Amino acid sequence: MFLKTGREDALLFVNLPSPLPHVRGSQSCLFCSSDFLFKFLVIGSAGTGKSCLLHQFIENKFKQDSNHTIGVEFGSKVVNVGGKTVKLQIWDTAGQERFRSVTRSYYRGAAGALLVYDITSRETYNALTNWLTDARTLASPSIVIILCGNKKDLEADREVTFLEASRFAQENELMFLETSALTGENVEEAFLKCARTILNKIESALDRGQSDPPGLKHFLFSSQDHVPRSLSPLLPEPHALSEQCAARPFGPRALGLWQTARLTVCSHGVFCRRSLPSARPPKPEAVTGPSQ
Ligand SMILES: Nc1nc2c(ncn2[C@@H]2O[C@H](COP(=O)(O)OP(=O)(O)OP(=O)(O)O)[C@@H](O)[C@H]2O)c(=O)[nH]1
Image 1: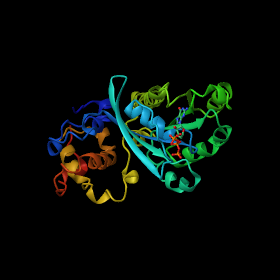
Image 2: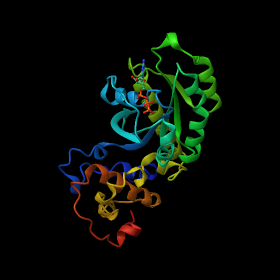
Image 3: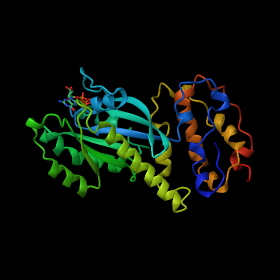
Image 4: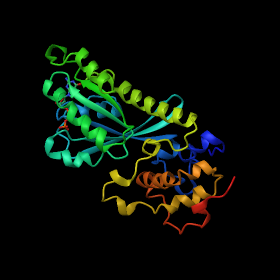
């Protein structure tokens, strides 16, 4: 669906026609049927249960044999948030110190993050400030972070009280939940709460008439930054989709987000790369866009 008026113009890029002609038949492209794509990170010290939280969220079951994550792992899920379909593209990072430089390279473009500590380990709680510093400096300043006190099921071994963690969250402008990847308690809530807040931010920025509010690009689409180098050669050239978009009634404000549209292609490329034809040169109108 393509929309023409003010506010919706800015949403144009997340309402691409589904399916796109050049990806027709590609059932694997979840992005095509989503209104939004948010890049999420799961960060926190080793052993806090980040991989188990992601697994519980995606598979609805506890990951029994979870090993230390090497570098990063990836998962995605389409959820419904306030009537909008949102694809969460979730990067589960390694908590071990030796991978810190690798995980630091994944912050860019993240719209949301789950910052995880283990309620039975004060050490993991004490490390939160360092993780937060990384998130605040390496991601967009508008990143939405939810603090998750995981392993809520291990009440007898608790070392961090709910009250002190909720104070920490308040002081650092974080949302807060205690979760259990084992029982599933509050796991979906954590992801959805974060996604809902991001969506509210986007919508209130657009309501204020900001077609390109600070951080919006980060919210809408992730860039190629997180695409593994091995996949990069498989991605289509940006103009493969630009041409498609240029045939649509762009409003002047939407043009301000042209660069964002180009990034969409990259996201598409990851999921639809087999269906995309080889790139054709862009038409001159693709640069200026037709007037309404
Ligand atoms: N009781 C309980 N155990 C959990 C929970 N979540 C994770 N675990 C256990 O905690 C251990 C570490 O879980 P992981 O998910 O691998 O931890 P991680 O944070 O991804 O660790 P790294 O990949 O090294 O950063 C595993 O033995 C899990 O079985 C939980 O909610 N409750």
